[in-house]
Image (tube, rainbow, N blue to C red):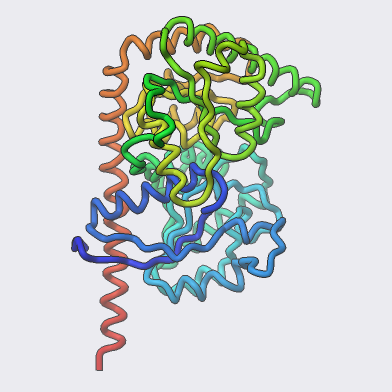
Length: 405
């Protein structure tokens, strides 16, 4: 299926107006699919957030009523990427965000791929939700038109722990598409003249989970300790590297709260001269601007999953600042565990300073390492995308036979 003039309109069920990291994933999917198959994906977007139980708009999306009919009207349907397979939803027929029952899966007659979706137990689970998800996977496997591709974020280890060795070993794992993002080649014009700079992402959503304690006071104390250590790290960076700038990069609106909390305790002289905050942008296309800021940084330090995913893919040296276990899972899966620091359990300043110094002293070595990792990821992802393209071709041939006199 390689034809540079080919376009494929497909149904894409995912988040498009939330976290800019999700948009980075969609960007990478379409970019790599075109590169390896010659086919440009043209999405018909279906916002997954409109299926959430807390969404009450008139355009609410209902899995049981809407999904199979829409998928059967499309040449290809992709659900993902995102962390949509956490088995923590008691009211869902699959136990997850993808609220599909066995009967709806059996109705699907055209290619549907649940692609680059994370599975973990961090949001909680019950025996019942896990059993439902296992039934969901079995139903998908029984339908030749449907398939599941988990993302490389530690999903296999969670599958093994909750669903057993057989399910874990049979599951297909592929890189998150964000590794293959194509951002704008240069950062926005208002960043010209800031080089060299270090880009930093901080997150404050799910604060009780990021800074677990025995109550609100314990969470607040852990978060304050985290900020104080980051303050000392920023002072170290700006003292060590004269002329260096710090650029904070938000992905969602609550990131601005975390950034503001840290900037507020920095010295006024540094805030005015050497500390900057990138704009908060959302919606598709925003990722091209935001991730160009990362791409042109000397190095990147951050809490968010796609901060690390995209920068590793772009070959930009990173330090993962883990306040949520999913980020540590990612670096473990990439065999880069030494490039991720646990930052929500007491003292981490010394480790962060040491790794920052080592990284700044060996930027070319880290870039080369990431390029090797990215090449392997690209080869693995390309195999999966070729299989998706072949499934569409096979279905098209079937359609042609049905339509032939």
